[in-house]
Image (cartoon, rainbow, N blue to C red; front, side, top):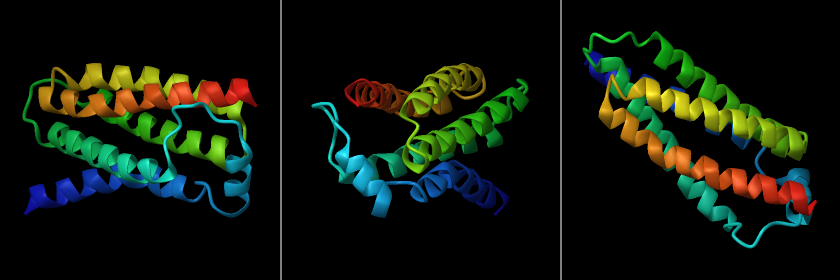
Length: 156
């Protein structure tokens, strides 16, 4: 039963940036602002974000759970702090981009987030290779988001 609650905890923690991001995601005035932006050709429809992000948060939650329950001799403190930093930067990006429309600053935060994600993955790898591999889709999506954020910054 303890492992079940650890799993629930890991999933909840991983979904926190998404919950915070939903406060700022395009709707109402923010939607009008976002829709008025010039966007690059490869910008997906809104429903794609609504499908992809929960999957990514779930994968990250499973990765965190694997780190928590792993009985490795490696210290996990760094991995935990990097995970928290990732979740914080992820939520901060949503606030900066959608909340207060600071496209350039959000681009910088996204670059830092990608760096922290790579660092997180390197911390995960010796503890749990599965957690490491579960983090790859998140990194790939962040790089795609970097393209989108950079193009929106240039086009606007």
